[in-house]
Image (cartoon, rainbow, N blue to C red):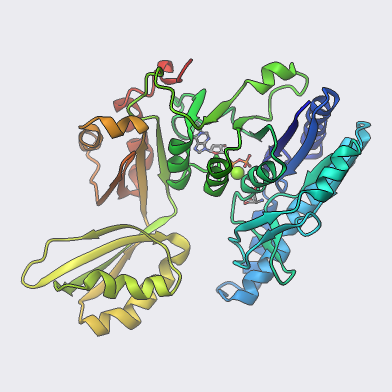
Amino acid sequence: MALIVHKYGGTSMGSSERIRNVAKRVAKWARAGHQMVVVPSAMSGETNRLLGLASELAPSRADKSYYRELDMLAATGEQASSALLAIALQAEGVPSVSYTGWQVPVRTDDSYTKARIESIDDQRVRADLDAGRVVIVTGFQGIDPNGNITTLGRGGSDTSAVAVAAAMKAAECLIYTDVDGVYTTDPRVVSAAQRLKTVSFEEMLEMASLGSKVLQIRSVEFAGKYKVPMRVLSSFTPWDIALDEEAKSGTLITFEEDEKMEKALVSGIAFNRSEAKISVRGVPDTPGIAYQILGPVAEANIDVDVILQNIGKDGKTDFSFTVNQGDFNRTVELLREEVVPKLGADEVIGNPNICKVSIVGIGMRSHVGVASTMFRALAEEGINIQMISTSEIKTSVVIDEKYLELAVRALHTAFGLDSAEVSKSA
Ligand code: ADP
Ligand code: ASP
Ligand code: MG
């Protein structure tokens, strides 16, 4: 008997039929003798629907009191699906109870809409488990030090699940979703994508941070910090498949490098459509330029990703960087009002129609020439690279958004990922 955490995403919880299916699957695990904690997301589309209503009423609000209400609102989606799952489990004859984030409690900071979990009290949950109940903990939400409801950022139920698993010292955290594991790239974009039987924690961290939304990045960070065994698998297999078979399906996130395992040079390709590029043209080419441009941006709490400073000419240069699309207008305004007049720069131009495509692989550490293979593959497709950024196990390029799918497909082929052989330890 083990303590197991299951997480079910929005599509998996998308209708009464699917919730019933989840209940039957969880009941199977409980009847096999496991102590079960289940973390559901809101039913698919519900979080978007709720946030859409808010922006109809206040299209451009961006202050803390507004974000507080957004969290009050968005958290209701998970509360509803948690109660529905408890009802479905009880209907299956399985004793079950659901708790909101504040009832557990899941304590977070007060960064509304992107709060960070600080601690989780395990007592209440443990008491229910010991009394033989399946415990449902609402995903995505927590409570701040002043008792306000918070949410953990889009896709945050993954993080709730892993954090609960860490707090409860669960034997495993199983993330059930609408694909049957982590693939070499998004299988909805590249049909040749291959499922990885295992993926290293470091690669998964990079892929999540570079845009693969199969796992929220903070969930992977938590898994790494607390060494939570974690697996991504499908909620769409028949609920009554053998438990042993189900427990071995999908993709396992691994923490130790297996020396014997032949490492693929590149394990995956991630992409992000939600960045935008901003260029400050004609800035005086003097020391301190990056600080004078990016200092005010950082003070406004705007995250900057890829940065490029061109070679100067006639004492002037261009300085470009990317931000999240949601921060685009704010950043352009800020630069036009505060930075351009102060620096005597020529102009600020913005381009929201870009995307970032990244190759990821721990094999890149020990091999040269990986980036050049990437650049060649893109050149052969006539795709212009606007910006480049590299780290030990990834190379990212910023390109025109219209080439996204072409670029991902070309890279997938160039790195030999189309072949089923890449499925590590297959
Ligand atoms: P859930 O609602 O279960 O949390 P998400 O939509 O957040 O599901 O994440 C699953 C989706 O992630 C898949 O449907 C797939 O389109 C997308 N995805 C992106 N990159 C990958 C990848 N490398 N492997 C698998 N899925 C991916
Ligand atoms: N319901 C939230 C979202 O749509 C959290 C989640 O699904 O993980 O982002
Ligand atoms: Mg998700």
